[in-house]
Image (cartoon, rainbow, N blue to C red):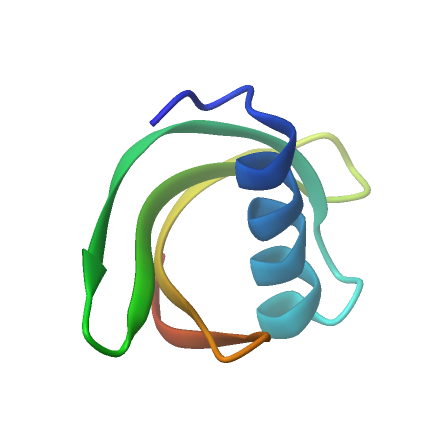
Amino acid sequence: MAPADPHVVEIGKFVVEKFHHGKLLFIAVLGGFTWNCEGGKYYALIIENQDYEGATFIHKALVVEAKGETKLLWHRN
């Protein structure tokens, strides 16, 4: 998985919006991996975020894309 891949970046932005509801800004996907399974394509991502005061945070997330839908399955600070 390439962290700068536009689709991976879009999933990273989805995670930040879904979990943080506009309280943090997406900075970048730092790394992660993907795998395909019967239920869809899974993304385990390490994401860098920033608050409005400039502090940065690293979060981890698990996302699945299946049947045209993207779902956030797990998130950890």
